[in-house]
Image (cartoon, rainbow, N blue to C red; front, side, top):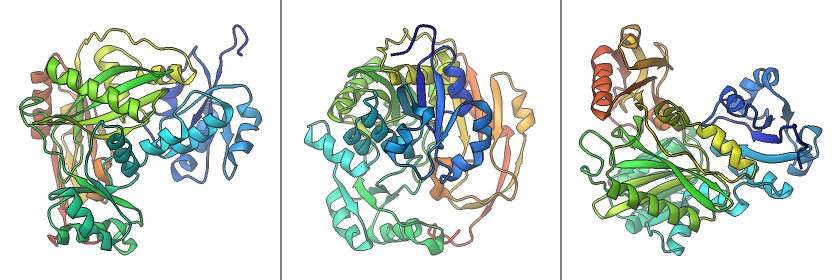
Length: 429
């Protein structure tokens, strides 16, 4: 029990994720005292460790067991725990269970980070059956493709940002892709994969020029599910890489109602009782279908929701992590906010040139152009969405204005790449 006038202590298990340390601390102001739990064996944590220590209390959990972590002085009197990192969900759930703190249960966190288990749970609950097979070695590809049908989607059993994810159209292509994804000699890494049915979208569902899928950002507290936002998307880049988001999205009320009902059913089936979720939904001719559900805040979504409607989704996540009931305010949009990713083609191996950034930044409605790669930077489509070279941040009064700004970005930015000479995309990079 927190004493009057004393902020509750909230642990944030830190790693690469959907909220920055500065953003977390800003959102926690007058709400909670944040202590970051940091495992320096993780590369991202190691790079930011000294900066974190200068910002806030830090608990070094490197090599420590869950019991040892919770016995550290920095973790005394914890009221809540949360993570914004996909890779830390299971560890956070285990720590929460030991201390009896509100978070995803251990089985729920496991299902949200395991695409094969997630498909099985949704099927068993009668929410959605999507043919999905586990692939541990190349010999299992044939039976998996027979079960899923062609074309199919090949992706890691656990992962995020569409890394090492693609469509496959025949057994030979599937073998090439799996070899490129798993062979260290070609820049891959061993992992278990799944092959699942490819969901075909309805191009008219979200309107011309927009993707045939959306994401739903939800907050759940004590089993009460509150859907905060339905995020619209720009069309995918090959093979399955995201190219940006817009808030609000473009769905009709009828589509929106179906999407939210399906999301509620899926979260309930997976046992989500506390926390923030990011649910990707395909808009098919037969209605909405779950692509996958993530047990954390969606990447970049908090910035879009804040700019579009002044709502702090990170603070909402911290609030429910403290076990407090949550009722979001009514959505009132003051602008249409977007992020557009500068996505290289699949055959790009390096950035050669990126010009026009300053000029584009002067256009009304463009807040900033974030450059993430310099000339000479190596590129690899297997890194998924995060293989972009930059992000255009902007806003407009309506969706037509958003499209105009994105088109302007395409015409004003001059980007050149070095391309692979070998037409086989599985060639070592």
